[in-house]
Amino acid sequence: MTTQQTKQEYTYRRSTDGCDETFDVRRPDGELLTSVHFWDDLEYAEEKAKLIVHRMNCHERLVEALNYLLEQTVDQDLKHGITLSEGEEDARTKALAVIAEAAGSRILPPDPEGMNDKRSAWAGAAIAAFQETTGTDDEDALSDLLGDLRHWADRNNYDFEAASLRARCNYEAETGGVAKVTE
Image 1 (cartoon, rainbow, N blue to C red):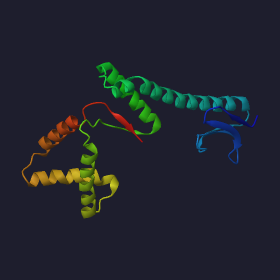
Image 2 (cartoon, rainbow, N blue to C red):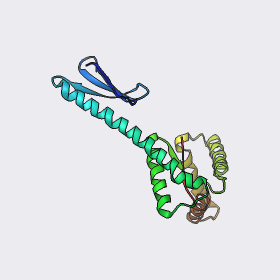
Image 3 (tube, helix red, strand yellow):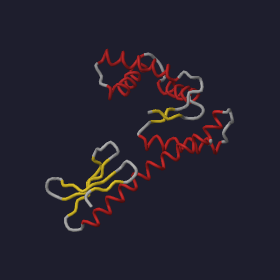
Image 4 (tube, rainbow, N blue to C red):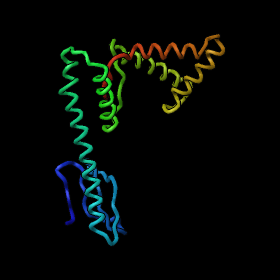
């Protein structure tokens, strides 16, 4: 058999890389995930490719099932104003973290006041002004600004560590509650 697909989106097919025979495992978008090379043991290589496809498809189904379970249970409670127990909140947070990691998303902390997008935009304006003034690239902008703020605090009689601790306390107060996943 030269082509084998599962009902899910990950697939494998027999191919060649120009030198060796392979079974290519492809992502749902058709991108090559990996190739299983073989020279003599065709059956072993095909079993290995099948196993990879099976595990990847199970992974996708497990993430979908976990997300659906949350939607139908604790998320419904929250929607109807039912307070979650500490264990339910902890389980929901862990489940959201796994879903986010599997989907390549990130978890935003809670925003009980609905102000954290604005707070982020204010910080973004500060970063942009710093980058315009210094020419710092995106990768280094935050760390360079924090370092320069330390220099500024040294020269202006401010306790940077105390301000940093206060900032952390403010951040924690501004992010109390239940996390949400963003794309």
